[in-house]
Length: 156
Image (tube, rainbow, N blue to C red; front, side, top):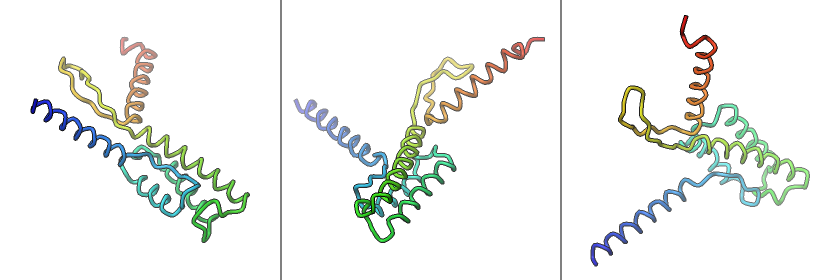
């Protein structure tokens, strides 16, 4: 009975640790109904984290420009609700830009691991890559196969 209680408590501890990790890894988004200053800081901090490591320089610049436009339109205000309708509409457009770029970068930055047999070995190894790295590797492999078939596979 005590081993069951120990196993149960260890399971609950692991579950709570996993939940805490999930809470810390929550996606960062811009919400126009909340105070802006704290959100901008959180987004800028997140862009430097591993959770958004696959964001391109152009997308990072686009996010920063959208955040700058939002802050400029807000002026001394801290909430989008206080803005004139025209300014509010422009801020909401920038919110969409920020959120879509962050969502794509977050998805591309997710790390997944697979057990794969490497060339020349029967033993499977754990190979971990981001979604974007895996996509680039698959595209490079596909391109190499196409190039090989076009050139006759290296046969004279």
